[in-house]
Each structure stands twice: as C-alpha cells, then as structure tokens.
Picture (cartoon, rainbow, N blue to C red):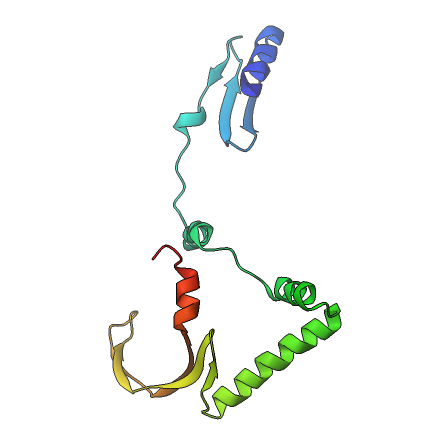
Length: 162
C-alpha cells in the first residue's frame, strides 16, 4: 500500500519525520515515525476511531433503500415520447392536468379516473397529541388533506404475481 511505500522511503533516508497520512476512499490512516530509522504505524486501517452516525447519514442510508424517483423532467420527456408533442406542449399538458386536479380537489370535488384511481379531499378530525420534546398534551386542529386511492386495475398492475 501507499503507507508501506512511504514508510520504506523514510526508513531508507533515516529522516527524523512524523507524518499523518490518509489514503484513498477506504480511509486508511497511518502515522509514520522514523526517528530511530524504523517505521511504525500508530493507527492502521482497523484501528481507526469510529465516528458517531448522524441523523443525516442515517437518512441517506434509508434513502438508498427507497425506490428511484421519477422526476418531473423525466415525466415530461415520457409524455413527449408517447404523444409526439414537443417538450413545451408536453409540459403545458402536464401542468394543465395537475392544476385541474388540484383546483377540483380543493373545491371538494372527487375526481375519478377509470383504470387509474380517485383523488378526493378527506377530513381529519381534531385530536389530542403529545409534544415529543416536552411531553405536554396538545390539541391538534381538524384539517383537510388530499388523498388518492388506486383503482383495482392499477393495483393489479403493481402486483402481477398475485
């Protein structure tokens, strides 16, 4: 490895030298000391201190297991390929559909797309909750939230082995 090569060079030159090395992606750390003409490693690959895992690192690990995200630009490109429309028209069509669904659901209407699913506004009742930081009981207000229920056909396409 590179650390061994550095140690060999320092050993042959008999230099009084202390150096900290970090090698490559594996995070190999080593301290080379040649005061007496011999090379010693204070910390090698297995002897490094473990860092505490942060919340951000944990969420990154969880995201690795999550399914791949199909982004809006990819969605527009897919519409463009399937319909033969240009990019601007595809983006306009998608925007029109999303705006229409949003407007109608906000008004309290139910949108049913046969073979795909149903969009609707659902009401959540007021309830008691607890502040996780203080443990104090709090009252959570009633609210409305948009919801989607997939159709039977869509569910069957998602589960072809059933």
